[in-house]
Length: 322
Image 1 (cartoon, one colour):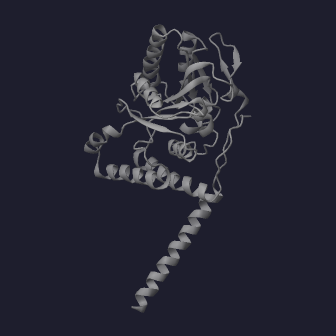
Image 2 (spheres, rainbow, N blue to C red):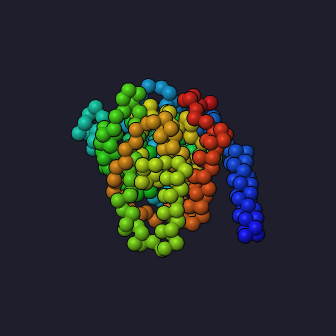
Image 3 (cartoon, rainbow, N blue to C red):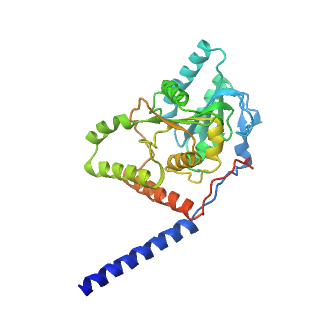
């Protein structure tokens, strides 16, 4: 009996020691919010090749909708998405003359012709409608979305993946989601596209191991960070300008788990969040490595919560970029 008690005591001591080590690692390796940008990242090219400065998210809105498209080595997949998006946006503008928009393609340090492909749309539609922000170095999807958002002019800001997995016309669904939540008095709200209704089909087509990883990830999201949102990772989210400024100003994670921190920040600020089912199709060419990426995201989820608990990360007040 004494031996068993000693074993239990040792296990408890080891568990506490391990927790302290994890807390120290999480605290000491925490990076700060990085809003700095290279001089080249402050400018975009017009249809004639002239360089113009990007505006700031701190400025008043001058358009109805900004669409932020993060793109890393997307020269092959992006044209399909852009054709669908521009077709929808142009048609909507014809039907609603007061509707104004812009698309900002953020080339996240690509090694292919992503920037040149995106600039073809600038030349076709003009720089007032399509702008390209080319990052000098790869930041990660979260970093690319943030840089594009901070350079936008829209009253509403939509992030949409370059692969076109979500039907672009479903922007009307996430817009309706914003109207269903109370955005007053500060005009803050977020509407998330969701694939949760497709989960049963996904489980049926996946291996048991990948299904286990998926449910494990969902549990970690619920346990450590975000509750009440079934699908945090769908790359189709709509923000009011005020909500975007509030959340992206505090965002630390720039890789795949950035969506989770973004929604965690929103819930800390008590920003209303709607979740809306959207049409979604699996597109080949994903940059995610199924097992390794999920393990990385799992680690990030644990560290997000621990870093806020230890005070390594704090919710920031919105400030202008350098």
